[in-house]
Image (cartoon, rainbow, N blue to C red; front, side):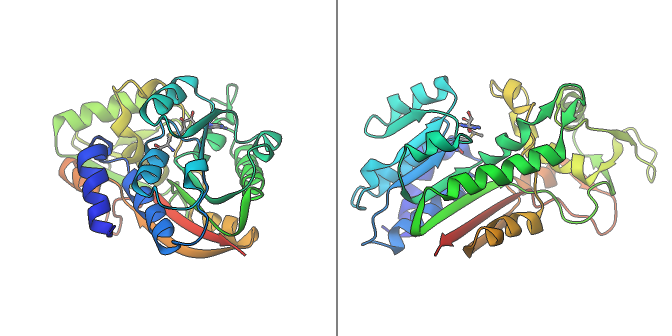
Length: 302
Ligand SMILES: C[S@@+](CC[C@H](N)C(=O)[O-])C[C@H]1O[C@@H](n2cnc3c(N)ncnc32)[C@H](O)[C@@H]1O
C-alpha cells in the first residue's frame, strides 16, 4: 500500500475527526517502518494507547506483517480501554501503568514501541498540590526513568517512536506579544488562562500596542496555549487542563535517545495547527514565530 492510499483510507474515512491533534504524523511514520521491513516480525507495543486509534489503524492496515496480531495496547484508563476493545476486538488491550517496570517485563519483547502523546503524562503526573505547578526536576527524572524501563522491552533492531509536545529552545521566559484577531479567540484565551493548571498562564496587557486585544506572555505559556486550546470546552478538558504536553526541548529529547544508545532514524518538528493560529492571532514581537510545539523522533535499538 502506498503512503497516499494508506492516508486516504485511514485518515479521510476513519480518522478525520482527529484533525488538528497531530496523530496522523505518528500513524504514517509507524506505517512506513512496518512497510519498509516486510520480512521482520512486527509485534507492536503502544503505551498510553487511549482508545486504540493508532494501534488499531496500524494493525488493520498491515494484517500481513508477521506477529502484528500479537501487538498490545496498554493504558491505565479503564474507560478508554473499554472503547478500544469494542472498536478493535482482535487486539489485546491491557490495563496497567507503563511506568511500572515489573508490569512491562511481563508483556514480553516488541519490535516497535509507540509512545504517542503519552510520555508527557509521566511529567504531568508530578504535579505538586502545594507548588500549584509541576515539580519540574522530579518530573524530568521520572520521564527519563520511565523511558529507560520502556526501552528494555524493545528487541535489538527494533524501533521506538516518540511523538509528543516540544518545549521551545532557549530561555522559555522570553516574552512574546500577541494580538487576537477574533473576539472569540480572545475570550477563549482568558478562559484557558483561568482554568489551565500545570503552569499558571501569566500575562499582562501588551506594552507595544496599548489595545485591550493585545497581551504579552512568555514563550513557555504561549506554547502551552497553542497546544492545549483544542481541548477547551470538550469532555477531555477536565483531564487535559491538568497536563503539560511540553517537558523537554529539542536538545533534551535528542539526549534522551542518545544517552540510551538509540540510533536516530527520523526527526520531524511539527506545528500541529499552524493555519488555525495564523487566522486567530497576530504575533507583534519581531523575530518570534508560532512555536514548533510537537516533535516526532524514531530511534533504532542496535
Ligand atoms: C493523550 S492520550 C493519547 C492516546 C493515544 N496514544 C493517542 O494518541 O491516540 C494519553 C493516554 O496515556 C494514558 N496514560 C498516561 N500515563 C499512563 C501510564 N503511566 N500508564 C498507562 N497509561 C497511561 C492516559 O490514560 C491516556 O489514555
